[in-house]
Amino acid sequence: MVCIRTVTASLSLCYEDDLAAVGKKIKETATFLAFAKNKLHEATSLDVQTVRISFNPLGEWVNLSGKRSSVLERICLVDSILEKEGVAFASVGPITDTKHIGLAKEIVCKTKILNLSVALDKCITNSSSSLAVCLEAAQAVKDIAHESSGGLGNFRFCVTSCVKSGVPFF
Image 1 (cartoon, rainbow, N blue to C red):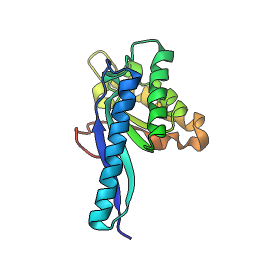
Image 2: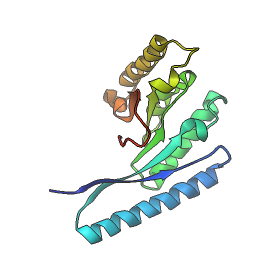
Image 3: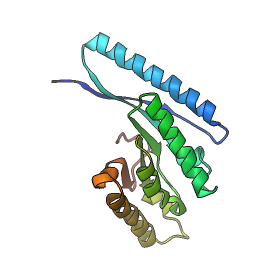
Image 4: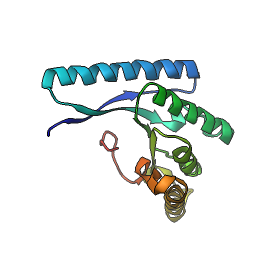
């Protein structure tokens, strides 16, 4: 059976967005995706398997330098808004700073909808050892495997290197 795998909409959030604004943006995007899914089905008779939202990188809409509990609270609230609006899959742009790789495990284990990645090539700088960055990312993968139900959290987390912008993957 032929079907349309997914319809994805990009949504940019920013620091200034309070939760009401985030909720409104997600609701509008989810409404658009439902409309697009129905129109595609009407026009082609093909089923659309999923709809998804792709966000800009976390560091652009969450103060990652803030108190860890506040960071996780905001991320978990966004995840719950996505769930409430019926969005089953959402990705956030990559973590690009070594000091935030450790958040990956907590985000994956505390959320249901959000998928994320670490871009190794962006984390490795003149002041950071490539081996240390790789080991930290590997530790996140290992921790997610051990702490998520059945180790399945790693289906929502990946580590990349040298992947250019615009390359589609989920």
